[in-house]
Amino acid sequence: MSTVRTLCACLALLAAGSAAAVIRIEITQGVDDAQPIAVAPFSFEGEGGASVDVAAVIAADLARSGRFRPLAREAQPAAPDEGQRPEHLAWRAAGADSLVVGRVVRAGAGYAVRFQLFDTLRGTQLLGYSIPVGVGELRRVAHRVADMVYEKLTGQPGAFSTRIAFITEIRDADVRRYHLVIADSDGEDPRTVVQSVTPLMSPSWAPDGRQLAYVSFESRFPQVFVQDLGTGKREIVSDRPGINGAPVWSPDGKRLALTLSSGEGNPDIYLLELATKKLTRITLGPAIDTEPSWFPDGERLAFTSDRGGAPQVYEVNVRDLRSRRLSFEGDWNARPTVAPDGRSLALITREQGSFRVAALDLGTGTLRTLTEGRLDESPSFAPNGAMILYATEHKGHGILAAVSTDGRVRQRLALTEGDVREPAWSPNQPTHE
Image (cartoon, rainbow, N blue to C red; front, side):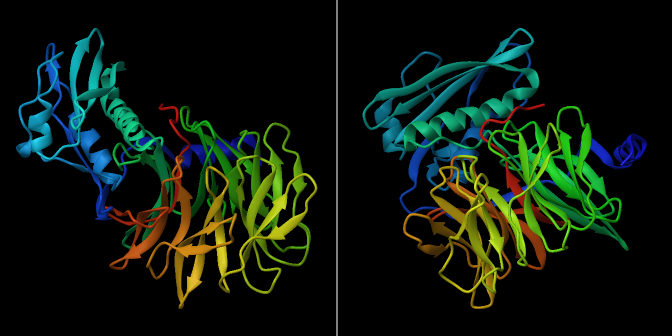
């Protein structure tokens, strides 16, 4: 494809920085033994005021995890002044096992966010930091504080500082408009990366969080693009006859695994070296092989194949091309996504005529259904492995939902307008533009 054609397509489609529909998050199920915690309102020092209620963002993050139960502000005792230790007995009597207190200080052109985490049961301080931040980054730092609190109290890294990508479809009269959107993990600060009147599909984050790969039908045929989120520059990396689909980045960010239908016409898995554009075929045969997902070692891919007569999940070694079947329970399993630790998969299984998210333990081979939807699809792990984001239907609309890997926590994420599908959770602590 010529540079002129690429430039014209870029000018016609790119809408970086534009606003997008807002996601509303509803926690539909949390754990019964959620930890009670209080996040006291952060005080402010300096001229003007803070543009973001930092404490409210922290409390909302912790509540959204389903593993914490923040104490309502009206039920909180008076917060201690800067540098003073809280009255632990008063906070414990109010029902808080842990307490976060803090202060936002105007510092030059930005702020310093100071916070402390206390164990009210033992009367001890668990964390204490001062974080410098730019004027427009208070929400980002609030997510970072929530991550630190979450990790200290659970022993597992938080994922509140991450982002999500997804596709929205908005119908206006007889026209359908598709948007590739990125947003913070809580749905805030949404930004449209690409918009089109033809379908957009399969967003995939680069390991450094700076780029997205995706499929666009703007030329009437599927093409795989890679787009820089900072500059908006994008490049067509696969424009071959037939299917160009399901791109997914290798852990080192140097390759894309793709589904192509070159040659004989049936879909197979290929590897594309991004620097040289060298293409290597990974699967070969009459079956449909598609939907690759990398293992953390960068040596293996999970994928969907009907080589056994019905869709099941397989694994292939990208060096020697040896493959083996992974899913045996159930007559239909597809769309695998490898967990960050490589020990399990999220996939879509057919159960009593419905398609649901399930977790496959690769050590035991046990398949556990996690959702109860009729048409669930596109599972994507949080980078800490605690939650799985997926697309589903609710009251006739396409929405996003999330479920914890143990099935105990559930969320529903609905757009204020349009339908949403094909979510992808970013790597941990992505670079913000």
